[in-house]
Length: 633
Image (cartoon, rainbow, N blue to C red; front, side):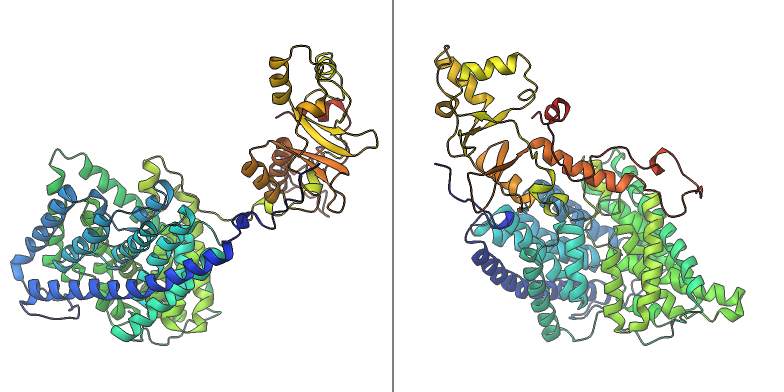
């Protein structure tokens, strides 16, 4: 008897308790969202306390402005002292506290099955608070994202979870951390999808939204219902300003490339210094102190400065100073191996670039009437979005800051142009370059799997090589050895009754085992083969079929009708799955003749000619020896 109908509705539902597990993960995501909200507030408060004590010798729970230098010449060494403490923590605690946090979370997802150690969860926020509180030109969001991710990972490690569920919980913590920092829950969800999950599924999207929503609610209760940056309604000049926005997009893309390359060049220089790594952050902080002595605005998170830029309160000369020296201070400090986030300082530099661009264009072309505030907003989003390859996230992020629908068009245009420039000039993003140097390949593009779009019936062999149930093993091996064109090249053969009913399947492995036990080979193929094979159906997805193969450790499936599981209609082997992949490749590479057949376009070559290959078409009958050989496995 054939095995009963083993129909997997979806590949993700192999576990019958899958729906229940989604509810469990969603409940854990709610807990993580609340806890991450409190963690974000705690880190923000710790940074405020340290900053107030170090720079003003007072106790305070809000981060003060460091646009003026209250320490005088002491600012030359105070950041270095804080960085020295971070160096000690990195050497004797965990080296994973170095950097801006997001690449480390990505690495945990990719190579460590989403496991982050408790040590990192504790030391990362403390080290970041010390580095930022003593003047480091960093943002708190990167460390909060990594800390939130560590929280989700730890909860996933405490409980019995799969690696996939733990990845979702890690991403929930990271998204909740960002949402609780900036009060931008939608952007936080998209950031987690773009940079951490590398997937878009209900099993991850639902928990992400829950965690981000609750984290933002905690932010409302503990801090303020307003976003981190206050942005006034401004005139974006649509449609007249669109050409200028296009130019700004090119400029932002180039700025992202320069910034990313400079950061890793400086990091390489520090790594080649013959100095104990413990002292490297302090050396970088000495450079920061020198810069801060002349340009105090480079110190600290600078949220107040970002708000000033976004509301056009600063002069052109100040914007240029911020653009140059904030970038330099960040590159030198972060490149030395200290702990801190990239988002806020790159926001400041990008906003300064956009505001300065508008002011310069208005001086050169008086009729341009560009809004420095509008250009600052889109520049802020475009520089970081293109550097991190998180363009969609930053478009939504900036929109959530303004709540102004008029910002959408310039944001989309500037961000995608900048992203295009970065893609052309940078192989890896500022987030993935460090991981790429360690040999890790990071997926940065998302597309639907062709195996989830094609049915078995589209690629199966509709005329498979079959054998009668009365044939002996010796007869079968003799026919194959003689070069029988109907049997050559296959690794398995469906076994049929005299009435044409499917009875089983026999593989080469079955035959070898049988001959080893009985060299005469007088047993019938039905006695030796599998009389309860796993089967596929013409209307099921290839993804479901390959899941059956993997789950049952088989390399091929007879294809039968659902209503009559003994009526063989085809055969699905590994080569059929390769054929599906080949079809997607052909769709992307082979150009088809258009209506203007005689028009020669630049770049026309052999690829522009219609392919003679039939492989991209649905596979029909394959009786020839050549097509059977193509089914070798």
